[in-house]
Image 1 (cartoon, rainbow, N blue to C red):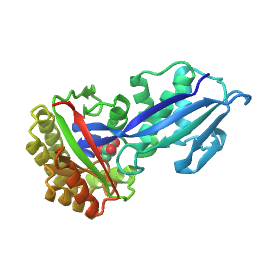
Image 2: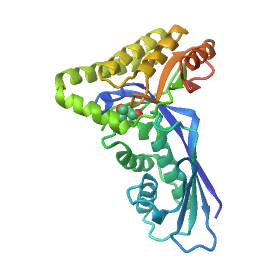
Image 3: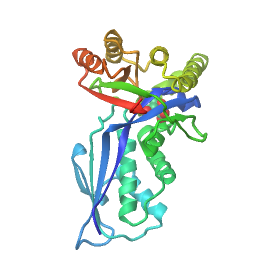
Length: 317
Ligand code: MEV
């Protein structure tokens, strides 16, 4: 049995985070420059069903038996075996690694799950279809986030930009134009479970205010979906700035994120906003190929710990 390697990308939310949890549309895209990886290798001479896990990022070097049952890695494997109807399998080692920043709103948890599910199922001779990988990854997201909308696991599984409404058919966006982004990491770890929980509390206390904010985010996402067809980057940038204002009103931005957004705009970005759960993690800025380096430099000077430049859509426009 040969070793099997699978990987899955990071992601950004272009429009509509948080509101998407409440049924509003949102737009997300994969970030191929960063990836989570899972390698499965047979463990010759070990008893059937033994699984060794290595995940240096979490100092993990264990037998799966030593992990709690509710651990995301154990659950990813357990649900994959269940889906395949496998009750006995050859011993294997699962090595995990990732270049996706952790707790930064880039979907590192969902990407690791998707990579595990693909690597383990392929190792056992039955690669699972995207739809099933997506379903299992969503189950694991519930461990991470409690009440996820499903947008993260979907964009990470299909590795394409998506227009997403919870519970509806997923729309893959075929971009006819290219869009350049600089992503900047505040370096502040932020738990999506906490920000999503805080927004829920605030919504319960003030439903009228929050429903209006969610609807306004949904309108922006709808408008952005149409604008993506036109290559009107000025307008797309304006929509990002409007979305950022709504996220500030939802109390999920932070002084660090606001500062980075301002720095990007001052350096010539069309628009800038936080991306993901907020209160830390990353922000994104829509730029041109020509000014991406200048914006990236400005973000580093304003306190970002790292930047990533990525391009979505038609590369030869
Ligand atoms: C996290 O990437 C996006 C949120 O909207 C949570 C979710 O949709 O599950 C904050």
